[in-house]
Image 1 (cartoon, rainbow, N blue to C red):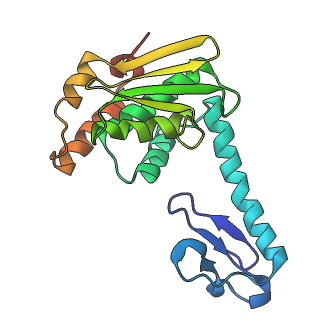
Image 2: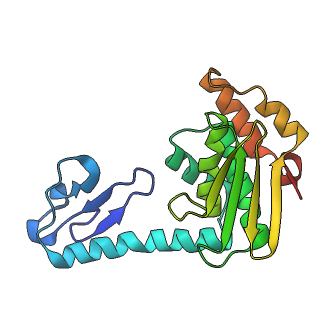
Amino acid sequence: MGPDSGALDLHSGDIRLSCSCRGDAANSDTINGGECDLCFCFRCAHQAFSSWRDPVRQGRNALTRGLHTSLQQLLESGVDFHGHLGPYLVLGLRMGRHAVRKLRPKRLHEMTATVWTSNMPPQSCVLDGVQVSSGCTFGKRNIRVRESKHTRAEFRKGSRTIVIEPTEKAATLLSRVSASSPYPMLREIALTLYGMPDRELLNVA
């Protein structure tokens, strides 16, 4: 990073500020790193936060229009948000992605979601996937949760509603998952689900 710039690291969530009036990039500090020495220069700070807002706004617009450039990008965003890769995270990501592409919301609050799932991990991890891929979040109050042993999600935009649940093939894989499952097995199942086409992974009504 140059001494006159600021940027957001989308993977770590770090916002880095550098100030030209301090001479070099070595003096750049990380805001959420715990020991922040803020930039003295308002011009540099303005540039930093302007560059930070742009990718966030672009990501929000891409999300609400269902225009993720790739499933890999969506998976990376999900893992960054959730903290690790897991089968129910992948299921939630794919459910929300499919809903966005079908219903085509144009505004952040235009689509709502109701998710039926267990209130404990790993099943409840589906909620993080749905939030990342659909834009329906707890903060915006456009997602609701209903406790159930069987995971499914209903997405609504105006008078249009779709209900999505795992296929029998996907449910069989998910039935092997529990809170005590070793991570290598969870990762293997997650990647298997990730690689399945929608028609094999999701039942949509």
